[in-house]
Length: 390
Length: 144
Image (tube, rainbow over the protein chains, first blue to last red):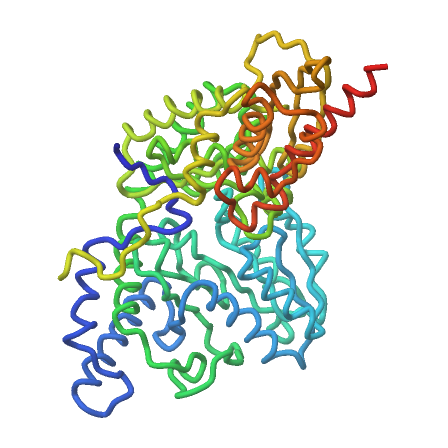
């Protein structure tokens, strides 16, 4: 049976070129970048070269890139680290209701430390309400964290406009606050990451969604932004992330980012076509099925669809038996047993959130794959609808 | 580079037991579209908002006080579907189960029948015993 992996928002495979770039740094060039001999220097040089590659893509200074252990860690450092370091300036933070748990749970932790968090809502298409953001900004707001693109429904947020709203805020003009953090984990492979153009102060990246290795990420920290570390030790990464650098993973992250950014324009066109084929095919062939999230302001590889009367996990497992790998916002597949907070935030009721399916396409997805899904899914839905008590 | 990893993952590539898989992909005794089933009792439990909802229809052998046959429908995940299917099998095999005995079925009996369920699924997806009890109560309320 052919395996059709359509869960690239969960994670991607590590592509060959990336793996190749990483390999020498496991057993040949294994030095500790902090060592003062040539073996260490070799690793150090490689890391600095990777940092330079990333900085060119982000249009920032090399010293503004901090390597971390992944997207979750970058979000935690960018939010908790920044909040703690600037708490004398204010204790108010703004974020959105559709953020990744790495952001939401970091904010919850800060609430316990005495910070006040405002959660901005979105419209039905999953775009955050800018007027709500404007009203939420206060003189003691130190940080705004809004994701670049959503991991579940693929919606792309107007990051540039958000940055402008924050910049135009009178308090920002006076004191330089609030800072603007964005989680770009899902966006990194397909959207522009120029932090100068976007107007961003802190930006989260990771390797595992862009055909790079897992367990490595980066946080862009604009020069002058005070951040307190979460991990203490040898003082690596300018003291913001102690611990011997994971050289092969850092090399892999930089290589993966370079390749995906280089290929993104062409790949976006190809994926958008396949994505829309999938969305239209499913909606046409399955009664009552509907798209979640904005129809055009969405990642080129994301299709999130609700199919009433049928539960998501059941569909995922039937698809699995046909060699198709997708995911769902249904509670039944989560640890919390609550349906997706993102789908609820865009106005779906619990039942519709339980009935959602997410397909996220990738570099190897073909038209044949999409045709197969469009053929198989209606049969699965028909069977599960017959069993369904609704 | 070694092609074969030293750390082998378990052969079973599935989240659920084989028994769950069998019931999930080939459910027994669910009410098919257009099928006529004259039930003596009907029970519904759960709600779509919680992610699980099931309906159970039973036919009673009134002389023997036995469940002669049953049908069901379930909105829910694999374990919800499989557990209803397994329950339907349990109460109708060997000529049907005495009502008295059927009323004593506990979630654990269904889980055992399925050769276990992942811990996280135990509390949410086993509604079958409640649906069956509701159907029996419905039958009892009509009897007189």
